[in-house]
Image 1 (spheres, rainbow, N blue to C red):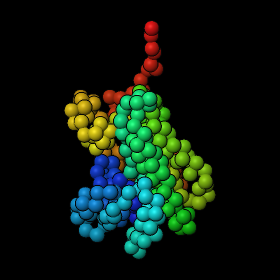
Image 2: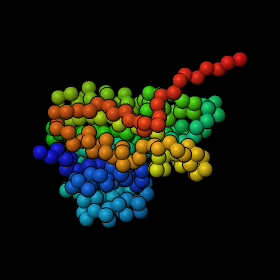
Image 3: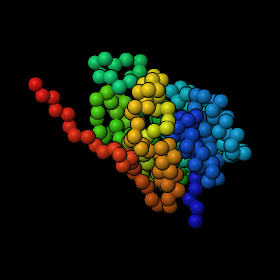
Image 4: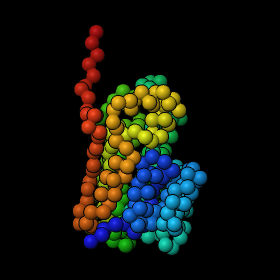
Length: 253
């Protein structure tokens, strides 16, 4: 028996995790609403799937735009039964005392506020229909602190706790919530954005590490969403075999 979601809504779908997640569900036969700021990349994705993928330009930081889009989807895409809150970013890796406040604002506005805007816009329909699933993309940075993680890690801790609290609020509604928390993942724009396009620094970070891939993350999302509806995966934490939690720092005189 298939438990494939009929209609999926993915934020940040122009590249990386979001594009891989959208492609995974479209290949399985789901209708997919793909959203991001770069409409050209979304349109290219939509062309791969005849009528199954609906591209829409969206900045999740714009609350009115999120609400308007959710309320005005075409009828065949309107009954969203899986929301994948993927849009997010990290900026900078310096210590807090040297951080750029604009970059901190951008992370909070995207990783936290954008996620709650999309959730609040689509959740009432799921509750009304008595089915649905919210999958949030978190990070192991929510659990394991590291130098320079400061606000990025804090935003992902928000995603983790918000996901758990959603589960509590949605008790008895039939709507599921999952938080996917990856470790090191290569082949995406994540580190390129974080390091302001310093490709040499990006390449050195992943050299020889055999990191996770966007396809790995898409598979974990797809697996969580296609389990029987009485099963809820609360949290998935995944790392490449090459990565593990580090020892605590010790400063010595």
